[in-house]
Length: 300
Image (tube, rainbow, N blue to C red; front, side, top):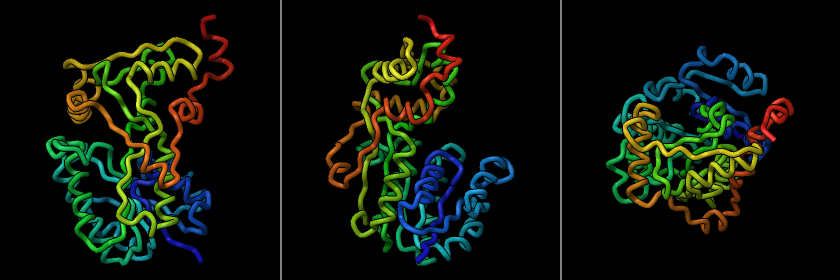
């Protein structure tokens, strides 16, 4: 029997990884509908998904009518929300609206892609965590089978620094002793589809997802090992962090600096038979090893 799955923002990191795992057969025979707010601005990604049999539709979390019709046919759904274009209050409203629509549509199971740290004291005062925290709280209140997946720092977030890392520097707005939980978005997709495949086992579960917990210097060493040349950690922790990384990211990681960095208890992952990749394996999978031309250009 074919299951219908609705994926919010199916062309970005987490949503795209969920689509990949759904199409792999991880939850059996599925028909995937993926939304994106601006399909005409992402034509290549949309065309690629459609070539793989995905029904790509316009879906804007600010406009529930744009996704309610598609949820009506869904057996499961994946929701991810963002803070950047409206703040925590708007993010919470969007998330709760989607949860309401999923309940109204009779969706059997909803997986919410949140963020690591939302369960810690003080997170309600951090814009990038507060909205997600409120969506999680709402899920605990309503009559809907759900799972909350909280990824650490996605390895894919370093893509914008690819040239700089090739030149020998990786930067992030943290102090030298702050530990960061890092995860491949592909492993987030694996966890999400595991929850969809066995909703009874995952009902009500909130799980942090990461493969390694490392300082920025250790992350730089991971890049160096994969690339075969020295990579230096640049700790961007003065006013430049807001100029370079934006206010939301700067605020979030300043808070982690002050509160012991990311914390990951590996036991819940192991209990659920979930095994995210190490940083090294994630970098290998995502194409950070130099190709032949790059290898020839590297210093001996």
